[in-house]
Image (cartoon, rainbow, N blue to C red; front, top):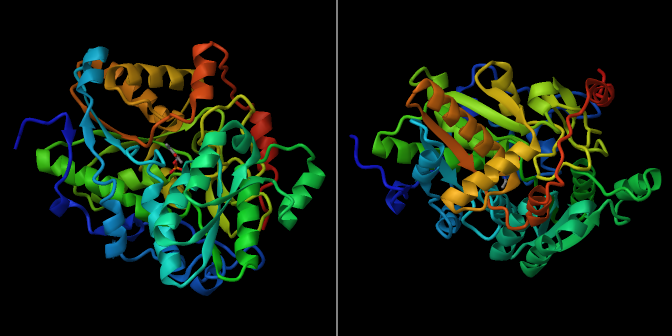
Length: 455
Ligand SMILES: *Cc1c(COP(=O)(O)O)cnc(C)c1O
């Protein structure tokens, strides 16, 4: 025990996880099933297989197998950028003057700049294995589209990305990275789909949304021979792939006798948080250990803290299955001044159920305080964090400062999901004191929730 804790803990190749962990197997209350939007019956593997490739459809509905083997080809790809380091934030602790011990799992050490590659390679692999020609997807901030482009290039698959128009225009370099990896990138809404044309007609000049880009990508996948649709978060299959984050973290903690008290993650669609906490949650669910879990979301897009737990559409065009989740309504779009990611209207059904069962807590934070935390972190730890990741940094710092007052020496662990090099316009706004906060009113949220499907 009590080995000297290195600044960075890297697992040996022989210690890396060879299976993903499916937390649904240990959940007493399973997440509610996806429903067919026409019949309101639970979706079957056959039905899902029209949209997703078969093996992923099976993973999506698998609530019983706790461990699922990671195919060797995926393990080989993971070796290009994993293990991800578990870093002891000695410099941040010192700067804060806290007795707390702070650790972060850094997922930004790859060209896509985030954890998304963990699921992109898995989804591309199963598509290739099924003999498909290509995949379609949407991307908002661009990290998912980049990760998927990299995975598709590696495996020789076509990749069509619908990129939310505002990001397409504001982040031209993200777009070029995707094109460099061979992806075909279309700003959404576009006139290449029925859904896109309908939205453009109804809202001329719209700058798009994730929900709309999803509808376009699904329409093209379903209508093109040899194509399927893939999604970078929210789905249970994505949480499963992202469990690699938590499994590596837990192995590193166990190796050095580190026992986290509080585990913090930012929550957009819930996949990075779900992946980080899954194996720890498994221990909690089996009564082997206890942890406090905190999901952190933007105050401008507060699905857990102010949304409703209900069945909702996953996309604007209402072509996807219905999912029971904490949601702000599928038409909810964060205010225009919202800078950094985490802008999806709903939350993973797994995270939603765990939250509803009181096993996870949630907090919302305002973006100026998020960027303040990002800068404080960058200046002492060196890494320039993604705005999304900085939501977790904010709460980790807040928790560490509480310990400074109480003298508590607790261990705080957070997920540092990525780097922010493509987010410098947002950093610029913050540095120029031009960034503002916006919190939606109760009326705005109620108005959006009034459009939840009724049945
Ligand atoms: C996509 C992304 C997130 C949000 O992840 P979810 O799994 O959807 O919650 C957080 N951080 C970074 C860097 C991302 O790219």
